[in-house]
Length: 260
Image 1 (cartoon, rainbow, N blue to C red):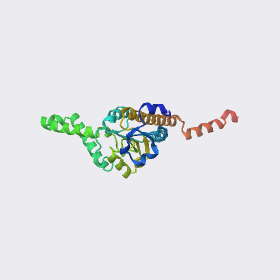
Image 2 (image 1 turned 90 degrees about the vertical axis):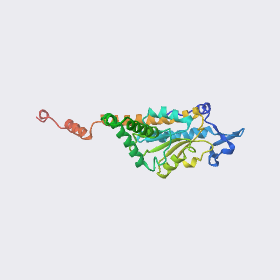
Image 3 (image 1 turned 120 degrees about the horizontal axis):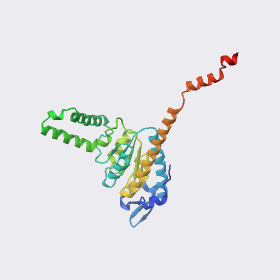
Image 4 (image 1 turned 120 degrees about the vertical axis):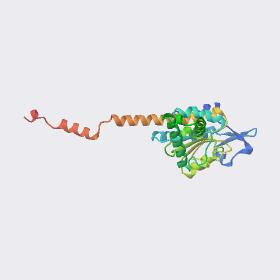
């Protein structure tokens, strides 16, 4: 796993925190200094925490489990959508619907309803509906797609969450904590890092900072999935234990000619 360089963090502006008056005292261990009323994040500690988070994220991906990315703020949503989509992991970038985790059964029913509407379009049901009915159903489908489309393939609760800005996504954080789902998150100087399992002290407002941290997480996921793929290939190619024993027995057993 590639180690993130201090200069990369610096160039991306990961060290810029919020105004001093907006700080959360629990972030004190991760604050290096204060300049012109703005807190400066200690990038050495960011690098350590980022490496810890990446190692854990890689392990989750290697086990074949799903990580749900949550980023509904303007600066982050496009970055997350573009980068996470390529991994096949679920993401929420429009709006966090309350109960998305704690009331997952209801969410699954909504997803099934989307699938039902999709079938209606292909089995001829739509042709037997009035224009107004088709329009209403289509609008309903679009609304569900906007809110839940990216998690349509999520058949069970995710094994972890990655969150950009835990202040904005406080409902998602609370639901994950209630269900004991591990959380990874960018925590700015106005955040409480004790609310997440893998806090990454970082500027969660600048696009370059968000992109860099997300890139590291995506790289860890891809590495984990690649190792999982290689593990499965190795297992598939390995001869069965019984076949090995039979082969060894055949080699050790003398032929009829040898006995003669």
